[in-house]
Length: 463
Image (cartoon, rainbow, N blue to C red; front, top):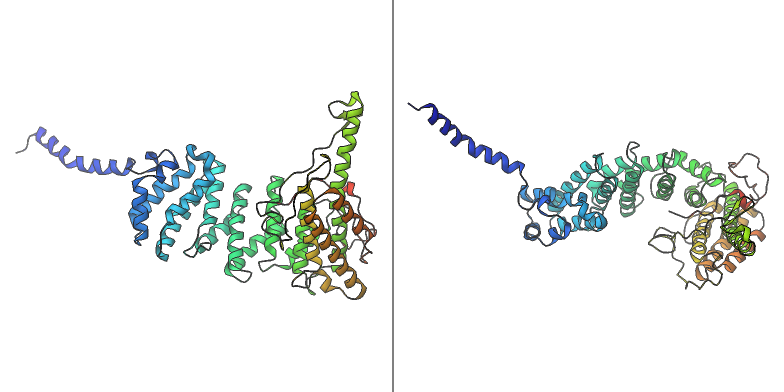
């Protein structure tokens, strides 16, 4: 009969394998994120090479999924990768899918990445930068043919419209959503899925950081031309165009949406919209010219009067430097404009206080976009198509003048060209509709005169 000591020894013998198995599931195994302190270590690991070979062979089972979930994905959140987080984000996708030739393997790998990144997005304890990059990665997932992976569409749409998420995450979601819409085309399933959230961003913009809100609304206005737009969204865009207090570039994008979506039954007042576009163009050009003149004036006063050293005289402070924001990685139109006008050489600026070349190119984008809203150069009726007789002729002529001025500014982005464009627009005959005053919507009986450029905020740049 076994003694008590024998029974204890037997118990230890039976439980030890079970405890070892449990520990093996809790302790990080070879190849887990804990064993790779930075992405560079993952890139050169034998385990990564083995995974790549297995993917090429069409294999994606529990082991490959574990590698993605426990080795690749945690790298996004490591502090050691923080300064290169964008590159790490892209490499996670590339390594996870590198060499895959079977659709089912791509779908399984993408699903593992998507689910892991969505858990990270939902983790309120994670850094916002990491959560934003996790959302970006969901939008960057690719199918076998390098098109946006359809499995990312639903979570992107949900996140884009989720008021509980930080605006930065919603920006990342809309960015991915836009990729899906662009790839699928105006009649594709992505456009249909995106339509409600796009319309909501235009009709009921979110609250919060002004720059993030402007970006979201601007992107939604761009997407309105690619999704089935509801009448209320078109009406909201028309109100933005008419709002003299709104951001200048937001109004330009609103004009593009109104011009592209205006139909005979859309309820858009085409004559009023054309008049608002002319006023907007004059205001935008005047704002940059006035800002340059202010800089020269304050510099002259500060240089001639020792009492004004430090930029202050009589309670006035010198205005900020000219806006030097770029138009985005796509160049002139930031990769989103209606066409490429061809890039001219940037001239040397003799007067450092003059309107800078980048500001001139921004105005070239504005003028070309406004011209397209009135009368597209290639196809579409635009606002001019809703008018008749002298009003239609005047609108078409205005579109021609705007487009020519845009081309001139793109070829020669300097203050003299900007002044010439403004002078020409001021000489254009009235379009026959009253121009609303600042903050006054169309159709309220505003006096038929252009709003003063001093009523408009200066220094706006497109997002």
